[in-house]
Image 1: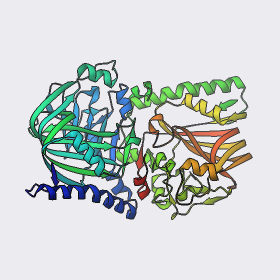
Image 2: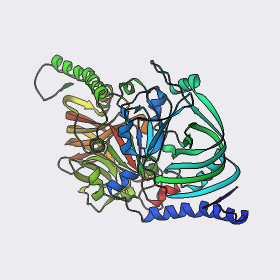
Image 3: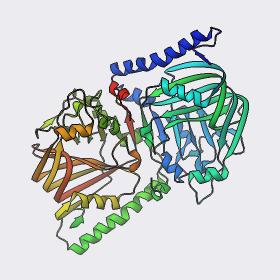
Length: 267
Length: 267
């Protein structure tokens, strides 16, 4: 496997050297920045924060309806993941375009009037990016490399654009009231998609451990293919060509879901 | 013990009735509101959010220096609690006035150029308030009553203004590098103040369980006396007259401390 800023035919040694430089230099560079950095003004800070609507433990407890129309979510970010009221599909937002991947495999654009019960978005501006070409890079290999590359304790938006020889994803079916827990709903209704030779974009986040309950620590990606024919919550992939873009967030917003069901669950 | 909106000499029965009405009606009223409520615009949402600088688990791990001057914190709220670089005292912000209570018991105003390593602030606008008169209301009794009064799963700013026959508080000594953990620093340096017959204000928050690690779930109050001669982080009190003001926050935002020490600790 080789990693370099733009695809080339340089020999493996040079490519590995560049990869290790990325791994070792970037964290130091970022620490260096953080030493000099003063907190930016409100405007610049807020526009670079992650915005989250509702919290994961509420969604897990069965609070499947929210009061935030996507027309309003636009003001919070042009990139992100989430779900819909009744958990009716997986949300992908990339470059301001919103897609819903349903359990029947369909990919449709999302109307401003539709609402979300859980979403995590950001205005995406990559701090760093690199391209990987590989005979077969697994999701686990990539995540281990990113974990070693990125300073811990921070929150990152990550975009993966490229070619996947295999990609396994899922989407849940829409829930009916009375709503079950999220685990029960997924167990009963989710459909798994085994995609092969697919080209597209996986958008997602690396969430620090201290955001547990509010969110899920670790990596989380939602995928949509360039032909808008497939996607979903990503379980696993094997990538042959991947452009990785990383955008560190200096902070995050959490807005509580105002749906009355929040008052009926123990979080 | 009796609770009513303004001190009066009505009999205990009527006072208790009013108290139970508060307990039973307010949560329903708030649920009612939350049903009708649409998410407010960015401006109104953000101005009513709690703002937090750094996270508690970072402070607990010994990240005692921050890069946020109080001159900038002003833009985030006029009410709150926190500490200072080197954990040199307890912070009280009330009605825009900032006070530092040090381990020597002194209360001093805080300069714009001073910086904090951890602070939690809000623009305080009470949603509800009531007055308590009691032969002796303990902090624990009040907290149990507020817990039964307030819908769970939300974040609240709470101001307690009144007369205390007893109030126990503490302030830590300033740390020297290399910094220990917060627990070690408190064990070694904190001074406990046993105040009696003191009149003043305790400012603080009720934090939901899902904010664990980022903050400390439960109640947290910092006190300053009206004569500006005593205060600190509140351990316990016995109140004889108390005006309780409660301000629910529809959300919160967290800005990570940019101090390089963040990269050296496991959160």
